[in-house]
Amino acid sequence: MSKKYDVYGIGNALVDLEFKVSDQFLYDHKVQKGLMTLVDEDTQFRLIGAIEHDDLNRKSGGSAANSVIAISQFGGKSFYSCKVANDEYGDFYLKDMNDAGVDTNLDNADREEGITGKCLVMITSDADRTMNTFLGATSNLSVNEIDEASIKDSQYLYLEGYLTTSESGVEAMKKAKKIAEDNNIKTAITLSDPSIVQFFKEKFVEVIGASVDLLFCNEDEAMAFTGKDNLGAAREALKSEAKRFCITLGSNGAMIWDGDTFIDIEPYAVKAVDTNGAGDMFAGAFLYGITNGMTSATAGKLASLASSKVVSQYGPRLKWHEVQAILHELK
Image (cartoon, rainbow, N blue to C red; front, side):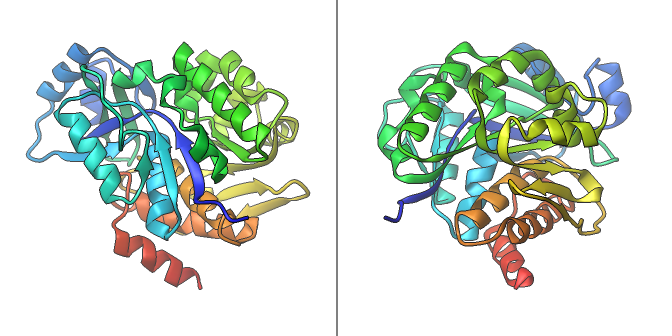
């Protein structure tokens, strides 16, 4: 029986505020380059105030949110569970998700008073992205945000690794995964960020349990999670954690374990200007592919092409016509 949704995602709801900065700016303000760091709201406001900027690129974001939006843009159907406050940014977030064609638990829910989370994304000239995140309302995401009926009506459940920073987030991930497993719904997870894996590895192990059906990570995350010092050893160790997995390798493409063999995914050569959202797009495109009849190899090719388009422009997402052009180019 066909499902209403290709993918049900659960993750942080953050409004992305993206700026271009220099390496010197990061050094002067003691910001760790290339990582996601949780900060308080005052720190985030201070940094924004210190950035010389003429324009502001504002988008509904969060890692898994970017992925489920990509699925919708490709022509799939996705659902997103998240938490925002009853404020201006929460209104913006809900409208942006609706405009992207994504159903959410927010559609018919009363939002609590508070502050919607925001992610300050700082892009340097080498295309690296550094994120300082104030979680706000999303830090309280819990089992209350889970829509059990929608999980049951999905092909895949997709869990965002950033949720491991919150006890209530971990409980929500575990409950969603149990609902999925009890109803023969496949589960996918992303490791999200090397620093998150380093500090919250035990929580990842707790959520993953015996195994997941599909895992997404980059090379650094793979080694951090497995405790191995080289990619070859890390990919072998990952076989005991996931039935299938994708390891993105930046300008070197990606490698996929399809359960039987490793598949090398060739990169698409582009000039990278902003790597923010590349991994999110890879996961979204791959999930779209495998839930819409593509083999792992073809889905990997689609994901590689889509991520190359993302890094060649500013911002974590593409426009609708750009995504449709990617599908046409792949044929």
